[in-house]
Image (tube, rainbow, N blue to C red; front, side, top):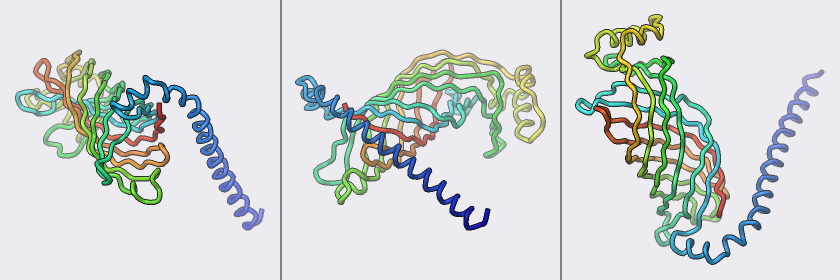
Length: 280
């Protein structure tokens, strides 16, 4: 095949893929508009009108997130990490319910609130002795954590592009809060305690690049179990692009949970999400 014919074929395939993607997006948008008709009767009911008068319109947000969560247990007395569990950076389904954003007068400043629920599992421990600087290693030691969280999430934001000629396309920079209840259970080895010299030495060898087996941690480190439900609070910073209720967002969050059995645990989260808001 000549180079001209090959380039033509490659361009044709590229255009074909792009046209197919555009057609799929158009079909999704058309299907959503058809579903709007089914929602109309519910939205116009007296019950829905009363709810909207109090809180505003309700939206369900569904989509997928690429998220890493690190569950950190800290010593209550010293505030030092005792062990860190990681979920890894994986795709996860997301579901939340939010009320319509409210703006302050005609400005770009606004606020909103909603509800969020998620389950998460972590099967890797992060090894990071204090004297190792920023060096870390992940290892599967047969430990785990299982966490369920339900939260009320108020937020404030600034919306770029709200008042221009494209009111359905804008960018939001926001700061959110979380008032949450979490249930966490699992098991882990205390790998970050410098006073446990045997275990700390194994962790340090792993950081230095030596071959270390999981059995060495099992033989030299204290294993603890945890199972607790607690209330807590958190904060979130996010950057979100909105286009006709499609959303692409990058966020960083920290959740602090209640102290238990000499430990205080927190969750750090970094997430990239793609979702769709469905008006109820």
